[in-house]
Image (cartoon, rainbow, N blue to C red; front, side):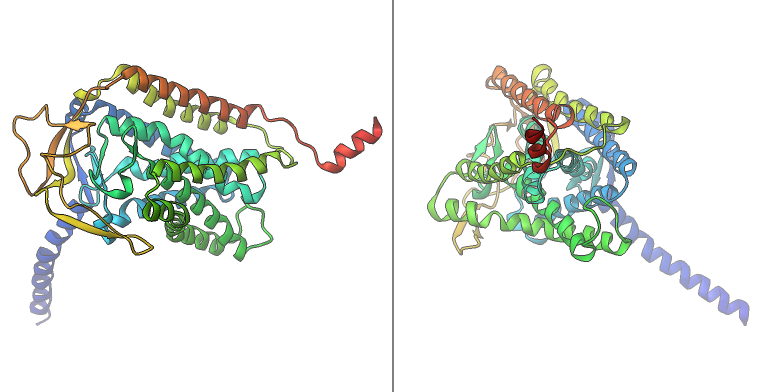
Length: 428
């Protein structure tokens, strides 16, 4: 009797496993997809190099965070979670606002939507920005704005060069990203500035609420730290979105002002706070640069050099991207987007092959145009209209970034307290 019952349970367990295992396997295949790296190297060598750069950046910033201790490991983890949330929220929760598609990579996540290296892109940008701001020892009110501006400075070569080499594609007619700068929506820069500033502010403000007596980068009790990570992850993105309302949505949606103007208005506001903070009397941090700081700086230099190398030595017309892109369909079908002020904006539901304006890609490398009702197809990069212009732009960015980060890390003037300055005058 015992044997029969046991056998029955064993048979039932096997049947349950036969049901559960295919479901688990299907879910796992959706969660993680592994592809042949050789195929991608032949199709998009620059993309493989860029991915290696961000994997390196993720590892270097993680090691740096653990080396520094305190709140830095929590901040690093928070940037990863913030990136996962921000990069995928619109596709899965509000798909009508979805407006970009990453090219495929050797490791893809979430049904082929998220390349592995994108998880590490956010700490590559935001951790670098936060640590540089920490070195400046700005007044607390200026720090989130400085983090936002430095995040743009680190992002801009990535944005300009990657889209030209079809590392991703944008929606062709979405009004929120229609105004472009070298095929980069001005709102992409706006996004990086506001989301980084919002995350940074929430990360510190929430912890200060729970542990007000503890220094900003000194670790408090674990409960306070994990709450601050969770709040920054969940509220960093909504806080960034809210900063679109008073400037972008008011001026662009209500008055038709170009997104370039709204971005530079935001940039100017941020710059005023940062400049005011820089002009304040303050003490420089006493700690000197250590080995891991130099490794961090070296990795940042590699980031800029990679994208400069792309525009000098590689040809975007040789890049081919097979994967998820804007769905192809009838040109007349439209969908409506509602702005925070109730304005109705429209965009095409599908990419119209007869009339699209994304000139950074075409179909010159395909034998047959992709069919209607298809979102998985091959696109081809296009030639530089003026390679010298891209080289000039990237060289200028590289020079500017080198001067700024050199000044932050190596050449800051010693600033004294007002009372100390007064005592020196009296002595003289």
